[in-house]
Structure formats: structure tokens, C-alpha cells
Length: 228
Image (cartoon, rainbow, N blue to C red; front, side, top):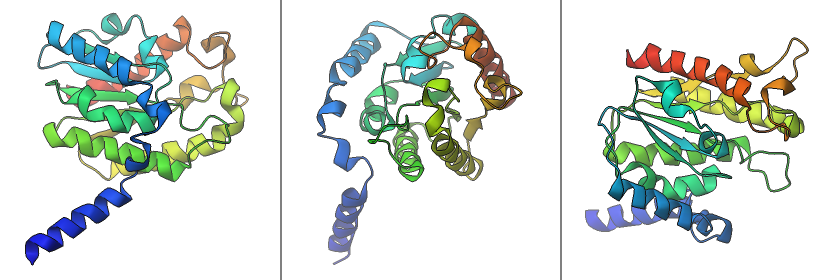
């Protein structure tokens, strides 16, 4: 009887999983090749056990000076352009499980963009929780850092919802051991309260070299605070 009860609970949990409805969606399956490339790297490259893994969307991909910017921390670079938490949560096991690492840093900014397909801040939080649960299966105590979604002119109309998602993840991180929220908006907003466009590329979405300098300083300082 007890075993039947456990099975029923497991089925109910699976049915309620925020990831389940995304697993077979075409826009999620479209990233399969990118994940397979990571898996090929995992077979051909070796990484120190004290590495910090940086994973997420295009701002991670385009961070060409990541290795130098994070020294002396060795890094594992695992970004794919256009990532959303809805696909990242599906692939999280394949991204994180092959590695031993000292800490993980995640940045994903595409779930709320001002589109009619945007997720709610609450769903963003639920998907992030799913990612953390996956990481914790094999990395129970590794610090995990969430880089706050950046304020940008291209997505300014969605900023109130983005702020709410950031706030929910910050609150969740503060209540759970070894989870950290890296606040960054103070570095990207001007005195007028609007994004500093000079820190972004022409698309007013992705960071330019000056923007990465700001990011690097904020993120490295937080890594040092926690890891040292």
C-alpha cells in the first residue's frame, strides 16, 4: 500500500512539473544540436574540479573574455544563444551533470521580453527552481549564482515584469542555502532611471565591451565575496 502511495505521489508531481509541458515542444527540441555540442566538448576537454561553470543565453555566449575576466577562477563556458528557462530547465541535467565544479553562474533573459508569449514572473521562478533541483541532484552544496536580468532599452516595456521575476528569484535565493542573486541594475541604469545605452550594442539588448566591463566587476566581486 505504501509503495502504491509513493507511485501516485510521483505521478502527481510529474504532472505538476513546470518543465513537463515544454519537453516535446519544437522550440525546445531545436536546441538539441547545441546541447550535443556541449556533450562532445565534455568528451574532448578536461576542466579543473575547482572550475566555475557559466551557463545561459547569448550574453554568456558572447562573453569572449570570460576566461580572462574571471581569472584566477578556471571557467567552463556553456552558453547558447536564445536560451530560455523553459528549454534550459529541460537540458539542465545534460549541461551540469557531466562536471565537477566549485560554483555555477546562470544568466537567462529571454522568458520575458515584451512578447505576447512571455511567461509570468511566477513561471520564471518555477522554472528556475526546477533548474536548481536538477543541479542539486549531483551538486548538493555548490554555490549557484543567478545574474539578474539586465534592464535594456529594447525590452524596456517589459521591465516591470522583469523586475518582478528578478525580485522573486532574489527572495527565493535569500531563503535557500548556497543560492545567490547578483544584483546588476545599478550598473546599467542612469540617473534618469533608464538604461545606459552606451553599454549595449546597436541592438540595445546585448552588452558591448564597456557593458561586459561593468558585468565583470559586479560578478567577480560577488564570486570573491562568496568563494574566498
